[in-house]
Image 1: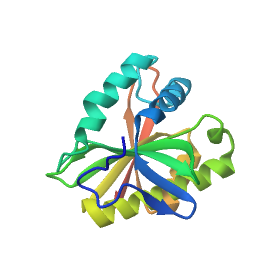
Image 2: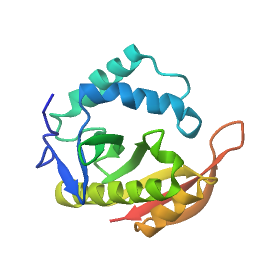
Image 3: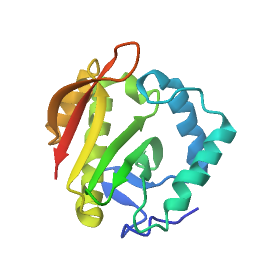
Image 4: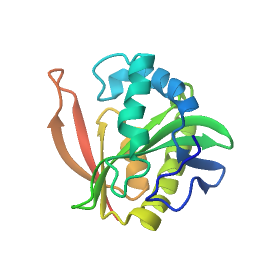
Length: 183
């Protein structure tokens, strides 16, 4: 699959040595493994099977490529030509011009804080290019666990405004910060 989102002007967005392209079929197994390994930090209730992963991308991701107002825009994230993560914009509300940021890095890269910081900053930089150039959104929101201070620091460094409202998300009393970037 070499298609691009019809709402975007490019198949590939590049910043420094990093790039974003639409998620292709050959990427989804690695993404599934990363999601299952990092399930505790995601809003994912169960382990994803191979069939579930294929079904999800066929039903909710790839059929959005031709939409003029997709519900989500997901990208494979590369350093040089190596797939290192994925993410994009989900729960897009075109009427309010708001979307939620989604980001997941490969299992080995999340272990190195310096590398994680560099990767996330570059991902956010490319995504801002996409948003400003093509999507004309007014706001990007995201959630992160309060225990993931590095995420909060990177989001603030990247221009997000941290709204310190705590939202109880489950019975384990884990909390999220709601982070907002005004574009």
